[in-house]
Length: 585
Image (cartoon, rainbow, N blue to C red; front, top):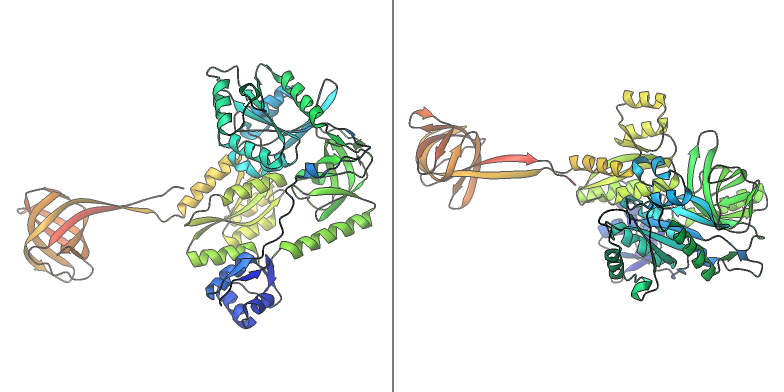
């Protein structure tokens, strides 16, 4: 075929055959050969199509789509004439252990850090504080490297990003990443140089490192506000809050309270006795208890509307984070929500969105089938896991983090994932797929533990993501082909051959290099070519058995082989040891 065929991200087997001008039976046969059972009307995604078409020595490429607007959800809100000032939404970001959450403790006067396992933020925490009679909405985003998806999500939600940098540690990888996310979201940046109370604190060095990232602070002629603070002593905290409100005034942040509410889901999880629970950020309008809310493929009549500190409220306005219960199923992390007029309409709108999503981007051939197909081609080992987490955001981060561990030799295959406790179906699936179950901040009921023990299924529970990642690396390392290490000890030149049988030869000669040590393996070499690999079963110095012979000495040697070797005078016998060493990712 002379030209490359363009196809959509999702295409039926029949349509692909038509585009390639091939009999559909040939395409189905190729799919079956690769372990994928498909019919003419089943949909496959681009990755699957590309692999199968490549097997047929043809080529396809993904059809280019018109580029969409790069505006963020915050930028899409156009203030009406009735718009009134709203609180600024501020994401607090930074490298792990730079004091991000401790700074928020100082602002709130609370002990947030102790609540998070390992002292590391595990998901986006949203709340409001009051300063000088005005509200500020704060989003605490994770700093650990595994939570890139949550940090980017946090930046997209905000008007302003505070990047926390430890004065004694400087700019680090997650700091640079936070800067990139803030720029991508096109929001203002304030730098909080934290831990100024610590020995070794050097704010000038931090400012120099920021300049290297093209963030020039005001005192150096730039437009970036940098404040020196200490979460421990609370130095500079009030000045930081003053600066947030000043930026909000300059940006003239407004929203209309008198329109139907809309906003974004920033977290979701399952709660015993309450079912699906979502944390949402209202962007405009006023949300009321009892409203019908549609988000993604689910909807709710709001049963309980709460502030993020757990208090029941009747309504909430723009820039307010709220907790919503009453959803029919778990909302998706990052989905927008809108208000619907009644339950019938809400149900229909959610159904329409669900159908649209399936037709746009979901293949009838599962991802696990595609992964198995690729790995079969490449002879890659798979580490199978089932993942259960407490909230949707954590699930996204855990799955994304595990995918970064893939190598050319071993990959993580996520057999299934979901939000909520480990259940019976998870154990059955783990048994059929030889998978380990990972639970992240979720319970395992006693009956499920018993079932797992009976079926010999491993369930591992975690509260801190880096422990989960480290354990996964260890498990993947066990699947790596071990490293073979050979160490040459010495060489003997054959001076005489005394006896040859079907399984053994006895010879004598001079040690010309190194020393010969028992036990050992050996190579028989003639004219620089290896004839055979043998086992050294005995060494003799004179008539006495010995364990070692040194360079320049004469000795006798017994060699055991699996196929006969006829030694001749002048052959070289090279002794070596071979050991296997486990490799680590």
